[in-house]
Length: 442
Image (cartoon, rainbow, N blue to C red):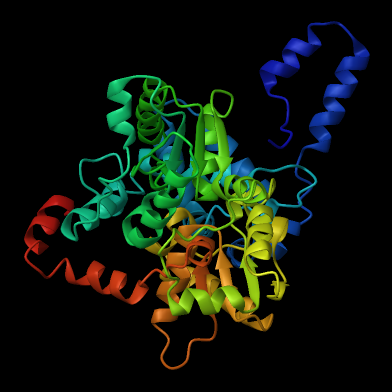
């Protein structure tokens, strides 16, 4: 967590101590953590630059409207959006990636504040949650479980969290959380991973639920929190003490909620730990790697880090070490922006729902930068990034500029068939389930 300014209540409490030295120190801290409008964030983000904004100005506007009474606040937000349309447009185009403030000396927290703006927009009637109906992952049906139901994707061979929660503690101690994209669109990868987990001797179960990130992007904080609490009620009931997260975003969301209660471990760290113990054969016995995955694993690699992994880099570091063990002879090339300086794939913050062009530009910025390394394969940590890049590449005619693989595809020798996934996502609306889908979501 980055340092934050002292609140008015905290300042008043310190002032009550009657110590001039403490008062001076508190004032110095707040001055140090106040935006100086240096425009460093503006130069790093086209959304801010085009609007002539910096995060400090965004923060000042937020403080002006957020402090209003419940009755006055919606009107104040609408007035701001009308009077400063460039700010409203910038706030809606934000991908929550945090690149703009990654080096901010005043420790401004762009992603957190931008999410809170979405909450204000909903309250003011400027953002309709129904626009995100497909990814309302706390509803009975959403795009991920509807896709799985229509195409018969399920994992009955593995213990499920909801079942072990009903049985009580003692059966498992580890939860595998693949995340909504991977568990829906990459069943071959998930099954191969599950078979490998069975061979480790770890007592584990899996969940096909979502971490609630789409709800957060829509500004539905209460619904996201309720969804996660429901999940963690099951985790507590099952006596689980460790969660393995595939997606860095899931890991970050869960760590904020229950990081002091259970051990939130990036899956690549667990895989690396098992490899060091001699379990470095990730493909199950009798399973052959597909030619595409096998070829990519032996080729030169470059890595696209998740923006959720920006600061602790646990996923990125472990993935690089894993693939170094898997393919010691392959070249590993770094993109110009990586680690703390990684960019956004364009999917964050559901920005494409408001401005499809900004997402298109951002995903191709990643592809072009990866291609500039000369690598054969672009390796992703976040399944949503993998999905977004695959969708962009699928729309390009002719030879693909670079291979796009999630790191689990390379480790477990199974490729995600993205052309089939996108074809099925489209055809499900016109097939026999089309009327039901339309009625359910619209």
